[in-house]
Length: 610
Image (cartoon, rainbow, N blue to C red; front, side, top):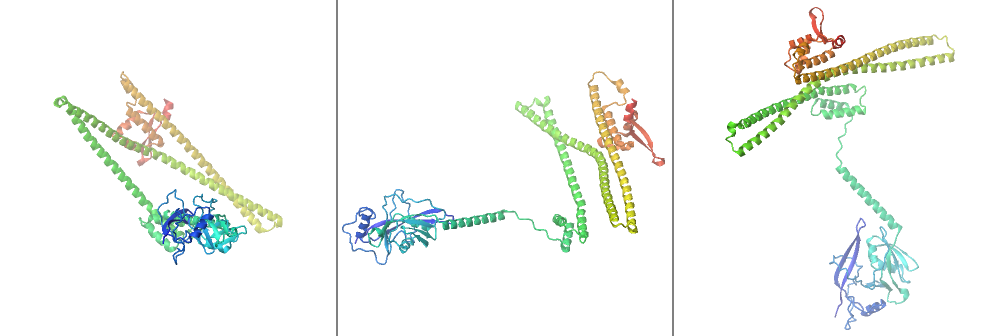
């Protein structure tokens, strides 16, 4: 007994959920028993091929024709399930060998492996339906089911009278198994009649049901993707703040207690703000809200004290920094003094050339670092002096701005009151006109009640008009005062500019006097101002007294000047002001015990006299 051993290559095509096509090539080495060799030779002759074995060798002459298939084992075909073993890779030039498929009512013979594969159209999306052409004329729907049910579950078959049909499968991968049968020759039974034979042509078919199911599947996948993306966004989104509870008496008492606690103050204030914005304030809850606002206001003093403490810490830190920097500068000075003493000839001659070079380099470096730190310290002192002068200027400007803002607010309040009175007057006039019209229509001129109403309305109108006139007069007065203040402000600004110009001229004159070669003793003796320092004092005192039009005592003036320089003497200032009779004048104010001397600025009047 001899057997023919052959390799069978099986292609299985599967589809994942996303319709991506993956090809799994499975090969299984197995022994297939040879059926009737006469039938095999007849099939090969029908295909126009020499009677060869599957592996390409000629059929052996000593082949036992009585050899049949093993009992109990059906013929192994590529359409049998369970042949999903992972094979070794297929060489690209090796042709795929197909096997004869035996069915109950028909037999399928494979095509010539040397021929090109059958052509197919482009696969429609979600294709589950195939077109099968080349069916035998005597083929029935039962034979079609018998052949193609091995590919998978068949849902519907639509057969035509012109030897073709459409088959719809349950899954998409079954279509690829059906395409494997394209090119096979089919024979019904053992008949060789033309009506009982045909060449199968299997191709993709476009069906509306397949497209609809595919679109539904795509929409489902898109929904899942959107849901997954939304869940991911919700997971990455930062948590929302806790909701603010609704107002009630119990919650109000809790918030009031939290407002008194410094650690829970910010949370309680946020809750209070939310309640007020929601409109929870009414007549019943107004007292509770007022007490909470009052407790919130009590924290203002604490915050101010904290700010003052922080400012104090900052000032102390600045002072410590200044002290440390001055100590560093002293040490630098000592080091530089050491270098300078070492550079003197008494010690310099005893050093070598390299030692002298190092000492000179170190001296230059120490001097540079000392100069840098010295400039930094001087800059800090200048900033402090500028801050002091800015604070004094801001005090004077703030007082003027507060006065102006008060007048402006009063003027606006009078304007609003004027408008409201005007509107009330118009309303009363309209009421009077309506009453007159009603009187004319009803012809009841003798009614005493209406006459009394008219008199009352007229009296009210007269009172409103008088009040309106008074308000208008007050408004005009305030406007005049505001204009005067503006004029005074402009004059003060001009005077400040003039004083600045005078100071610059005085500084220029002093500089020119210092640079000149000839002595100016006679001119200095003749002029009341003897130095640049006195000129600066005159300018500062003039500015100070111009801001105080009612005059100031010598102690007040000196207290202001001591802020700028502690070395200023009161007698020197009084002597200087006494020499400038056209610029300053002294007056006596008060009566009895309150009698005091005050200095005033009279520079504008003295300018006219001189």
